[in-house]
Length: 126
Image (cartoon, rainbow, N blue to C red):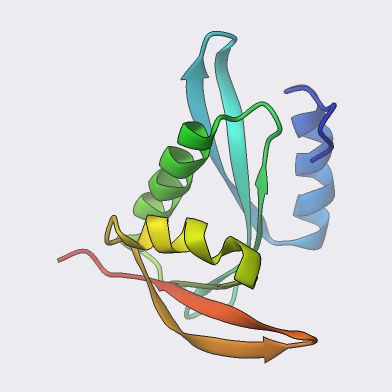
């Protein structure tokens, strides 16, 4: 999402992404400016699992909004679905932090293009 975008621009993003992907999971946070979207996870339903094609962080979201929102989205789907996704090496620290909450785990490395990508999956609740 462009850095100069506002919450209203979210509707445009939603329309574009739903055309490219089958769905979008949205995390919202209560802020001083109201209840606003802070991130969106783009997903494809692959019958036996969900493939997360990417996560869009809104430019107005704080690091805390992003971490809590990502955990909330994963927590909301891991009871009913299995989700897989990859991350770039530059984002490994963030996803490792999310994994510390027990909602995802790293399952390996995928070579996709020029750089290796970390592969992650949701963890079933106990």
